[in-house]
Image 1 (spheres, rainbow, N blue to C red):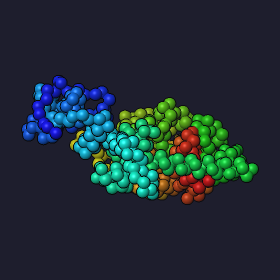
Image 2 (cartoon, helix red, strand yellow):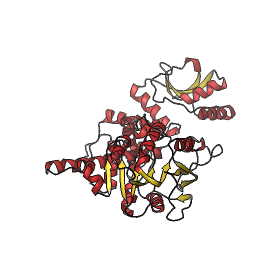
Image 3 (tube, helix red, strand yellow):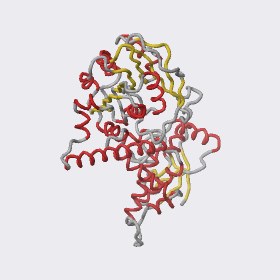
Image 4 (cartoon, rainbow, N blue to C red):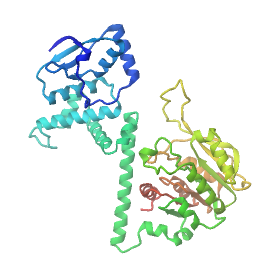
Length: 428
């Protein structure tokens, strides 16, 4: 392999290269490094046709510096397979890819070697390429290689997952999705067994009118707007909820795009006659809506009495901001406190700041600690009274009520979250 100066304008960059996105800050830093110390690692091109094999970031940085030529390692008579392998290996080792790009590159590398040498069968000594070989090639553990390939397949099936900024976030989202699927499967198997046995299914039993009157837990797979009309007037003692505000996780979680402030207002208006006079209401909300006064004005328009204090759930395990010198660490979440009419007295003093961790794996992106929910419930209700959550998600308000012997009414439109809530509540 020889190295020589090549005119940058003569280099052909195929539009279908593996790398599609470029970090402008990385290009700027690379450009400054090249200006100060020169090009340390030459780009690689095919000597036969001047097609770039690896080094597009270095070319972009060189153009930014106004260079007309760049050092290049020339390789001859490369096959299409060899070109792709070289590009993949260099991109992976330079660590300048996004997490999704890195995972895809590793998956493609594994696939190319399997296509060339055959895929090794698990537990077989017949040869072929396997995960162990990919791990050795990349210099990582077998477990890490297996996980990376699994995450790459997950992103291929759900491209929205690839938009997450870190591999840790992608891994967490993948585990969350797997947990949801396992809960859905559990509910499906239970419902099928009930039908085969000729008994009433869990869903049918919970959705019956008798369930609302006779059971301590009433959970139904419809929208709150559809379900609130079933409730008796002046029958609810406390509201605790976190409406879908269309925040960052919504596109990944699959939330309905027609939700947000309008839906929240509709539900609050429908719910008001169902609450007893003096009922306490706690609503977690997006901070942007709170500081702009949007929530305050919404509650006043709906005829509620709004307290001047808010409850803050602080999250001790949240990492610092990615821009610590430009913004405050977002390690808290507010809940607005309001009431129907003049509020009943609090049953016990409560601090405005509640620090708590979620116990176990967080399955819902907006899941709240049961400990915080129990503190709210014990402050606002006595044993036997009824709490409602119109947007129950994974059903944590129900879990807290069950532990404290309160009745609870839960509505959840999305079937996968309804299934998760059933399992969290121990109803299947």
